[in-house]
Amino acid sequence: MKDCGDLRPDRECNHFIGMGGIINIEWHNRLAEISLIINPKLRDKGYGEKTVDLLLDQAFNYLNLQTVFGECYLCNPSWEFWGDITDKYNGKILHLPNRKFWKGTYYDSLYFSIDKADFNKK
Image 1 (cartoon, rainbow, N blue to C red):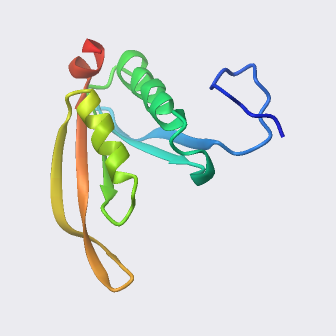
Image 2 (image 1 turned 60 degrees about the vertical axis):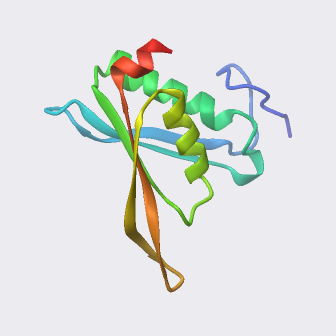
């Protein structure tokens, strides 16, 4: 199995790295949600951050959206990743209580929002 190394499209990869997208687009509000899943074995290698950068570029500079948002439940360790991404682009974070009931417990969520102007400053 080849190591994909980076995200260049000319590289052949024989394993699942992840997938992401801009979803639930509200054209009239120029607003959409970001979705991302990375193979747990390949986390902390920069794939997630690079993918988010590419998705935000598409959302803001090609789809002409104004705001991209997302939500991550605090029972998911990825909430720290999304907090770091939001900080990178001077986005806004809100902690919402009791958003997920899982294994008998209610968990809060990290709700985040990144605007086009803040993304294009980076």
